[in-house]
Amino acid sequence: MVPTNTGVVYPGPAQRNYIIGTIFLAGLFGFLDRQIISLLVVPIRADLNLSNTQVSLLYGFAFVFLFATAGLFIGRLIDRHNRRTILAIGVAVWSLATIACGLAPDFTWLFLARVVVGTGEACLAPAACSILADCFRPAYRSRALFVYMLGAFVGLGASMIVGGIVFEMVEREGWTIAGIGSWRLVFVLIGAPGLLIAVLVRLMPEPTRKGVALTESLEPERIVPYLKRHWRLFLAVYVAQAAMAFWSYGIHAWMPTYFIRRFDLSIAAVGTQMGFMLAIGGILGAFVGVQLCDRWTLRGTPAAKFRVAAIGSMIAIPPMLLLPFAEAPWQAWTCLAVLVTAGPFSSSTGTIMMQDLFPNRMRGQGTTLMLFIISLLGTSAGPLTVGLLIDRMGDEPAHIVTAMMLASLPALILVPVMWLSSIRRYDAVRLPIFEADTAAD
Image 1 (cartoon, rainbow, N blue to C red):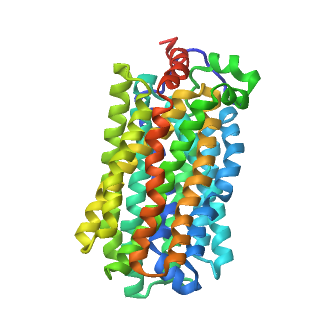
Image 2 (cartoon, rainbow, N blue to C red; image 1 turned 90 degrees about the vertical axis):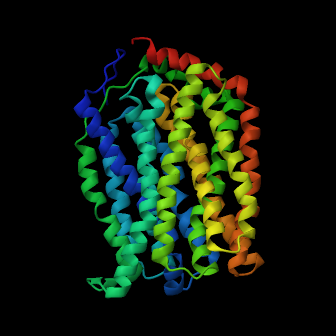
């Protein structure tokens, strides 16, 4: 067990920088391994003879099958045991599973490998966010968690840029390793570095937990009664997070295929441009969102972080409506640029709100519960809904973007509705936890 400490002891600058850098790398490669499959849909589909629905299952349901369910158990372990060890094991597991994706001879193998990738990555968000939250004072916690988000968004971009470039080089030069080539070699080359990152994670110092006194007083009732006591607030928060994941993962999964098929662009060209957009838009959107979270919270704005989430979703509505009317690549790229900036602006609030609304020894469980809900209702259902709509409307390039719009608009509207329903309840839950975290400062 990790020893508790009711005093406030933060890591020194050297330790904190090592923790930040290592978690950044873990987040970067985690999202790179998670997202690379979206860029390789065309060659994978041709090689394994898959339908659009099967592709959606690989991207969404296969990944979240155990990511969501095992995550609930993992979150409880993270709240009670050494977080760096759990995270290191998770990094090693998902890296090996990514390599295994490159060895898949058929749909079943690839599906199971993606299930294991999701199982390993179930450790990432709850462990990383819990560790970072204990490295900084509560007033600066949003900025600390931005480090994790930064790795995620750079990883999203890198999955497109690196994946596209590596795939084109492998195809052009005919590279193989032990008979493995084409899209399979991309998985192997991207998964291998994660094994080194797992070692770096295990060498991190474990920060002492903060705000444990309040948590221990709530411990006997466990997390379920705590959620029941505030069920209206958590229902709104979790539904909003699921809605944000639903539309954003639908876009991430199908946009590369749309550009490749609709405008006859190469995988490398789409990967490079979309990769830079995802990275720059993600970093910019999350940075502005986090700054507003801190500024409005310090100013006393009610439900400040939830407000940021709602604004981001409202910003995404106009480009989503315009996207099906794009006749030239630049028009579609412009709409996408706004979407991939508004999405992180909105979704960056999720992990921050979990640190706001749960006492210390419930934060891992609260975060994994959020991941469970957004995985089933968002990450899995979003791409799958788009794929099912495409198969129903017909396998034409123009139908891809129409399906994305039809699937996304209801989710975008739902987020501000949930925010409006929770303005008064949010701070009633947040303030006692904030006071416990800062009591010994």
